Image (tube, rainbow, N blue to C red):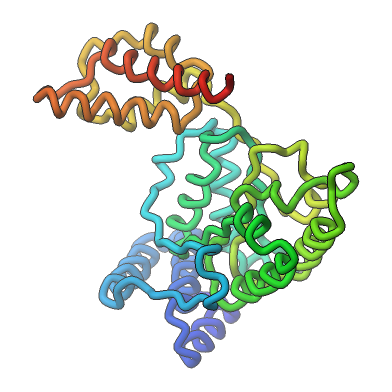
Amino acid sequence: MATAEQLKALIRSHLSDDAERFYTIALQVAAHEAQQGHGALALDIRELVDKARRERGPRILKFPVDLRGLVFSEEPDTPRSALVIPESLSDRVQRIVHEYRQQQKLKLHGLAHRRKVLLVGPPGTGKTMTARVLAHELRLPLHTVQVDKLVTKFMGETSAKLRQIFELIQQEPGVYLFDEFDAIGGERMLENDVAEMRRVLNAFLQFIEQDSSDSLIVAATNSPKLLDRALYRRFDDVLYYALPEEADRKRLMQNVLGTFLAPKFAWAAVLRQSARLSHAEIDTACRDAIKRAILADKTKVTAGALRQSLAERRSVHQGIRG
């Protein structure tokens, strides 16, 4: 059965009319029951929560007026199966989900679950999708903080805006993604640094260290070398992403093409063509090939058609790098 702490949390959330918190704890109870071998009960609880959410309809989040345009909210429906990353990395993502669901069990032993995570890697390798998967798996809204806009648009007010964002993190449980995180996480000793940015970084370090909310904080960066070393120890986990290897590229293309995948597919040539492309570029190439097939009244995508789309993505990729 549910732990005493979970029962008290359920009652508190119900009495305070905090439906989202109630749903989150109920799902934690479901996960606890599943761990105890009560699969049927866990499934019943999840179905009750899903039904209640459908009947309640989408939640309208009320952000402070001066944070509009800086924080974008959604309720992702991206399943874990859509995230094509190495198995070792997928296991670490699942560990974050598992610890979040079992946080009450960990607290009984004086331990905290992973809830501050740094994602590092090149663009298009799955960092943002990981945040979407975490939100979907945990049945939490995803709030994306546009860090680059925060810094460039509100220079001089950034620390105050950060304080408001962390107050929001405390008040509104969810997955909070700080995208383009290196915009405020730059090394404090860089010669081109300014006093304002040092204050912003120091403020962020203070806020994230003091945060004890029920939210999951995810920061993503394409430029780990720019990050201040003090940041790393503020996170519970650091996940490194890379361009997909051959096996992952094949799995990604199979996932996206689905029933459009032609029989007797020439995989060797396609995999050579897709080398050194990111997950996002391969995904786009597959969808371009599907669109071409549909508009040509075809039901399958051939290896030749996909190679053409991949070549186009490669030319775009090389143009950007050049």
